[in-house]
Length: 263
Length: 287
Image 1 (cartoon, each protein chain N blue to C red):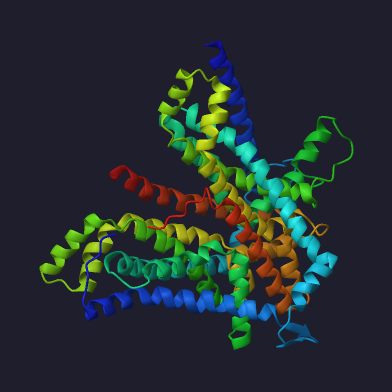
Image 2 (cartoon, chains in turn cyan, yellow; image 1 turned 120 degrees about the horizontal axis):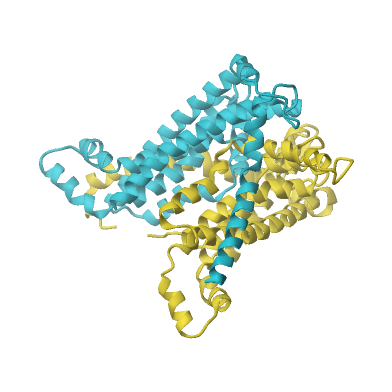
């Protein structure tokens, strides 16, 4: 009993220390985003919302935020749709070389984002295609398509086949089966892959940095803010991004959790 | 997965469904990658790319110390980060799996990985707030009178390692926890019945059984750490450049695309080597 208690005490202390380490930078970030002064470092001068006002008044940051939202939504939709179609084809039809196709679709997951970005950049450069938010979006579909495909493919259980067959026997076309039967049955994993790829795209830096030019996404705009050194405004925008990510995460958790409960 | 065998029209339809994803991957991933491999064998001369095939960039990499140091710096930092992260994450994963009541485990786990979701760029910046000359640690130490002059905690390798370890402790806690909760309590009971003490049980039973979780996490750590540009750039300063920083320098300052391509291929080879080394434990699904 005493030994168990000792283990408990050591465990609690250890957990507290590691949690402290994990949360330290986030707490400092959020705390000093309310700093009433020009430097986001101790001493804490008092509570102020001026830096949040500064963020919302910053036209460049606000347009970057919109760009990020636009790129994340559109690229996730495309990745989800392509992933779903491919997963449907590979799970429901016998295609030659399907193992190779799956390997090919998953492959970008194993390559660092820097290399994917560089590959696209060199080709765009040679073809003379101008960099824009569209090229960033293309890159984000490349990194998120494997994820969407893998999630959706793994949830395409055999038990759905008979339901689909029944729908077909009742005269539904393939597209109708897919849109009205398969997709609703797979809704949790479709939503999970959509929101997961949104969080990845929303926060992705290196592809957005290398493949954008005049219109940039939020992480790239934050990156250029960093050049001005420590600044409470950076804290404020950072805290806001964290808040958005946590909200996305909660949404995701609800859908994933709903799914695990069912199975 | 069971699939219905089909006639030609059906098969054509199936190709139609899978084609968009395949074409996207081929056009925007495979083709650019192959092009980059080709480009790594060309050269940059006087501001334009000369399409002469040779291994000049790779030879230069091994001959120029400034370039080669990038790889060794990357490997050293990645190795330190991976080992430290495993050592710190394992006990936490164990505590969450074994000591926290079942009801609160999910909450504890979500809390343990919450800062994972701060912005990628902001996460490194927030360590700067902690480590800077006038940052939280220095101010605290000065206030309690431990030091009189601020310590140089940022802009060096230690800062890079701290930033990385912070990120990967969360990742590894997740993979190791996932592995730990799958273990049946019977293993422990059996080991105890056979006379093993707590340490022996851990060392000979639990640890080997959680190796897949450790290796999956270690591999992810290796891949993400060695390929990252942001953390070393923000926290590491410009003293000991890692490979991604050198790649970005080739691009930004010198516009030397062939050299950047060659360095990227070398980066990828390092990751492949790590994969081969961990492959035994990384059972990547092949259904």
